[in-house]
Length: 290
Length: 345
Image (tube, rainbow over all chains, first blue to last red; front, side, top):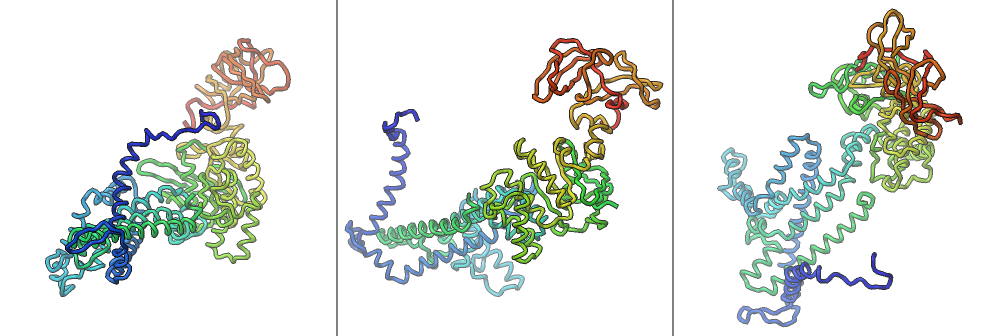
């Protein structure tokens, strides 16, 4: 560096200021305010009282209703992530092995849905499986395959399937990125040493795409856990998850402090889960991440 | 009958024949190089032997058995790839052990053979290293050990040394040759580097545009190139255009004996190191430039028959200076005569 030893280089605060102010203004401040809000009191007739109490947190802690909501959110996110892993990883692998014109075409097919609003994509599921009038339900009933409509709307299965569909591109993309880093000759090398296709996938390809599966998993899990539109449309108010619960507390019950506590808890839980699973898998597959 | 037999092997991609009717027999224990410029079909040939690319026509037989229906995993060949293709998530020992594991070799024997293979390539003590923590040369050795440990019927080397620096490459050439001699493994090497092919091979197969130009020992292809392509591809060569007829050959006023069947325009080629400066006789020439290269001098000449280069060993004697008029001669047996525009072009 140009400065002599001992001379302190002043951080370029002036240059950092605009970005810093934006960050503090739109990210840090609302978060801190939400956190503070969760400690305020609320009553049907008195509204929000800016005091410091643990009432909301105690309620979440002790009421099994909230436990159920969070357990359901966790269950839905884990299963949706699992589905994207099971379907998305092979999808990415096949995509990666395709030849020139088809590769681009199918990449577009996979990424195309990202250009459409989540609401529209979720409503598609409602059109297909929505009660007696759902297209698929009607067709299957006419064919006599089923006697009543398939239970999809307002079920956990429905939310999981719709979330997995909506978030699939994120998994495919991250696995695909990992696949592209693999030396294409590695598969030939393993085969020449006597490995079957299945063994090549399990022993050679899978360990090398673990970083992609992990980052895809983290993206899908956190998006699924905090998703609002999909559980709101498919689950409705009968099947609430953490995010729709917070929404209802804010906008229907108008109990902002309780809603804030739910939102903060969701954020903290997500951070803990993501960071710890990341550390766990990174340690297990240390050599691949280098 | 040869151990590995390529019988009129052809590979077409659309209308383009990457490999066009190659016939080659490799005897057991032999080291054969496929040498040629990029796009000559040598790598495609190797991939067909390995089973990664299907043949359009012809057959490949190993020890009399047709390989057409044998999957790559069952051919039992050891392959060293240009990129080494090591498994990055496995240690050196795990990489080498993989082939043995696939063959169901028991743990104790596996460990013994892995240790053996790693010490064969001089990597004892590197068992638990990961490929990314090894130098290019070390990775290369792991790849070689991995291919050899399964005691392959044939060792296929796909430009194995091209990613190493010059000094390391020479060391590896010597080592590779020694290992191959000691084990007696039949080896097919694909390379574009003529020095590598000459240093390692028992026989060289010179390929160009999907066909074989010449098969022969390194000396044969170097000293007696069968075509202009071979002459130019292997080492430097001087070519002079002349006219032949009636058992004589004329070149810029010189009249030299020629095979009686030759007539019309012919090309005479002489290796630069086979030409000498002389007081009289031969071709007249002028020295354009001379370059000192330590053990030899490289002189660029403008002769009566066209430009030429001459390599003179540095034996301490004087070398003609730039601009000097000289005469150059060569022994008749060091020159090759070919009809011009002939074979292989």
